[in-house]
Amino acid sequence: MTITSLLSAAFVAGILALDNVQIMQWMLSRPIVSGTIIGAILGDTATGMLCGAWIELIWLGVLPIGNYTPPDAHITAVCSAVAAHAWGGSVSAAVLATSCCVPIGIISRKFDHLLRIELSAKMEEMMKKESPFELIRLVAMGILPIFLKAFFAVLITGIAGYILVPAVTKIISTDKLMKALEFSATLIPALGMVQLARCIGAKSRKTWLAAGAIFSIACIILVKMS
Amino acid sequence: MKFLERLDIFIRLHFLQALWNYKGMQNLGCLFAIRPVLKRLYSGDKYVEAEKRHTQYFNTHPYFAPICIGVAAKYEEDLMSGNFSKPEMIPVLKSRMSGPLAAVGDAFFWETVRPVIGSLAALSVYVSNPGSSYSIYALIFLLSIYIIPVEWIRWMGFDWGYNHGMNVVDILKKRDFHGSMRRIRNIGALIIGLVSVFYVADGLLFSNRQMIFIAIRAGFLGLLILATMRKWSPTFLFYLTVIGGGIVGGSL
Image 1 (cartoon, rainbow over the protein chains, first blue to last red):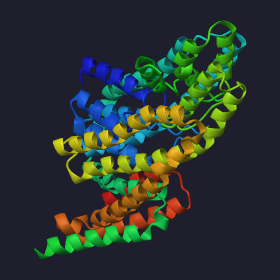
Image 2: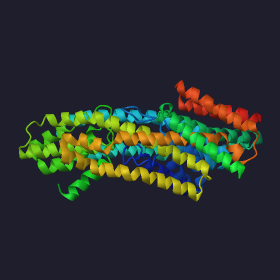
Image 3: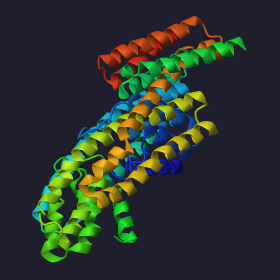
Image 4: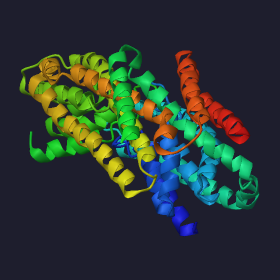
């Protein structure tokens, strides 16, 4: 990982972070997308995509409804992609990186909460003045901290990953631990399936669940017979 | 309304939540979006009054907000032309529409379309190798089937609100969002049924893994279903998966 690729990844992560709430909302900040993009910038699309897919599945059912701020899945995915790449880019490194970066998403949620409180205070201050209000300045004020948050999170993760590489590589290069982490990775999709089932109310869609299951059992039998 | 003004509003609608705050929620974003209309219609004290009207509390689903803003823009024009005489009612009407639209938008986009597309994208990584051209194409395809309808609703939503006023609810009924939501959720359930069997029986089909792996996956899936029914936090379940899976995987 060169300093140029790390800076590019941090800049793109900052831009993509705006898609989460502030601008567009095109799903570009969804972990599966942002993790893949950051992975591609670092030259390790596979690891980035894997980290993004896991984060996507973990927080699939955590929704931004009303004034609830969910954990920042974007920042977790981009930091995981950077950390996993810095730590060698294997499946076990990706599991370790994702586990370490999940708390970053929870801390980031706290930051978003504070920013919204700050914006509320600014709005009240603005309302006391005569219109036309300086909305462009306020838009910039709403956008810039989010960009900087993701930018520095990626930068710090990249640098920390680079510094910690020798120590972490020593730990994860133990055959037994690598095997254990790789096995954990195979269980994560189950978590996503359960989250999706909860989201779509699969309990009341038993016929469709059964139809899918029967179809795949039939496919397996056909393949085994042929 | 001229095309350039319409385009200006459309672009501004993408910044609706840039000023999201706890006090007024999307109020400033809404004012930012409707500003070209207000600037065209008013000047001086009337403009100041109009801006104040749109700084009242407003919150709805971001993709459906253009409908409310279209309705508000129409009422502002009617107010100027004398066809409407109660300016204080404009924020009330806007707010009255925002609740039902937020309910439909949250249920349709946040609780249905986004999780289904997100999980399909994530699971496609397991179907092909992560980072392979197939997985990238799948991701681009899934993103485009999300973005194109979203942008269509953003563009058309303003027109629906502007042309039909408060009758826009009938237009939405004709679009049958609830029916579409039900169908997408059914497809989601079908996918879960399909994928969960392949996931558990992976060893049977593609490799000669021992039956113990299949038993572990099936048991784990069952445990997760129980834990989710008891509303355990997904973050906690993730750590449980990594640690529990690690212990089991390491001892095999």
